[in-house]
Image (cartoon, rainbow, N blue to C red; front, side, top):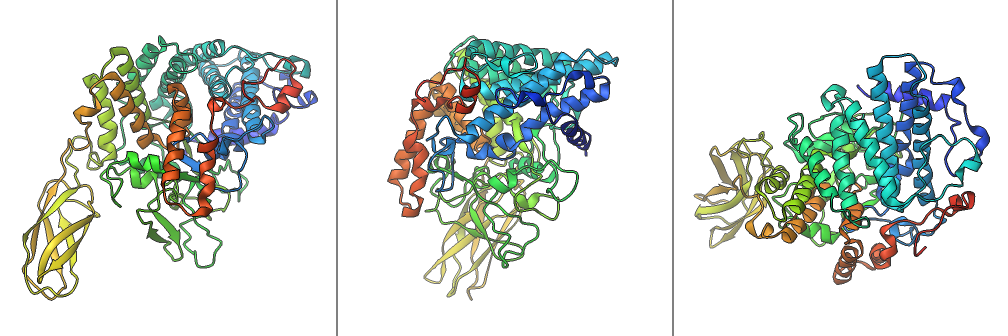
Length: 622
């Protein structure tokens, strides 16, 4: 697999450079001078692996990413124990998780600064040197983006930090930090390899850089900078990715996440993902907790839960009712938008081999786990309780399409055909229109019409739906006066290609019942005219589509902040919870939505680091 070299490099570099100085908070005596390293191209690559490594730390994508309140109005941390902290929007400057996020990002930045300070030291191939420099500059910029998008103004360090005296650095204005982020990313875009050349999503490539440039520019265009000139830049970079024939949506939305679990790579859609490998039970590992923390709840340590293909899932992240209502058909147990029942688990896992999937009733919405990260698809055995090889998505092609549409909408002050088509591409895939291939017919059953009621039926019937190239369609029959009076569709199925469908009836002692099926159409998923009538309406359409497509990928809070909607949208969830019938044991889910206030657009500067750095000033309200 393509990540083995990189991960072996990470192990080696962490062994060799484990004493690198952490910015703003570590004993300065544990600094390793560059005199003892950076002498060869191999050592530069090892150092580059060390720059990547903090992204896979527990403070960032390996563990806390789903428990940091970043899912905002889409999801919440489903535990009653976090009375304080970022997940409950009741955080203090002394919070250890806030401090870990800060220090981990600066550890990555300092490793990048060390590498860049020594980039010209070895004699080596200049093209390879440029690639290493480009990746390093991008990663430094991305660490700074993770900082400014969560803390606001932060100290901007561009040289290695070797002594404690150099940590008395004031916070750099947000605009200036963003300017450096853009400069580094643009420089990287010219130097790193293409996505095709890299061949997998775990390493930075031109498309990933372009997509992240679109994201960063959208952040600059929104709150708090509100530099609306950046929409043009966001549009430019997103369009470059959108128009690149290397990239396309996978036909099956669920396959995107199956790939992350099964260590499969497809650069068409997954432009950048944080990689994890192994189960901690061998010497070679870089395991995360994506599957364990964000997977569907399952206690594999219970004797009856003996399915070896399942694995322990804590189910830390649950969906809100507000997210659920954004999907088509929210009052039904099925939705034509197939993303809903993949993103929000419609079942619980219980005893049996295979594990029994028990459907949740329609009344249980807030009880539903996030469903994207399903450990049943992991391929590393034995499956460990607390660690998982599942990768985490940072940038997907569907995100780029929606960013393009948002920037295009602002620039043109209306929904243009190109922007509408970008959103419709995402929606069509979500509704299963690409399951048989883009451009091929792929439908669900829209309705079933009784053509003959039959007679003599006295006991319940079994309805069977076959043919048409489709799968999974199910229905039930209601009897009246010995005939079939109603057919209720319980699963509309998918992948029907327009060839004849047969609906048959068995049991019930009667005969003669017949029915026909009507299919959905290719345009059923497309936006209706009322969703594109004005710039404002289309923006709201895009905002909701980002929830449906990108929920539980740690993007929602940042989106709400830049749109100026964080408090407003969180309070909408709070009101919805109060209007919902929930057991008293779930009162804790109110906490983040009740507690949120305007100060929560950023986190507090960590108190520990303020104690080390006398030049730091706390954020307003903390």
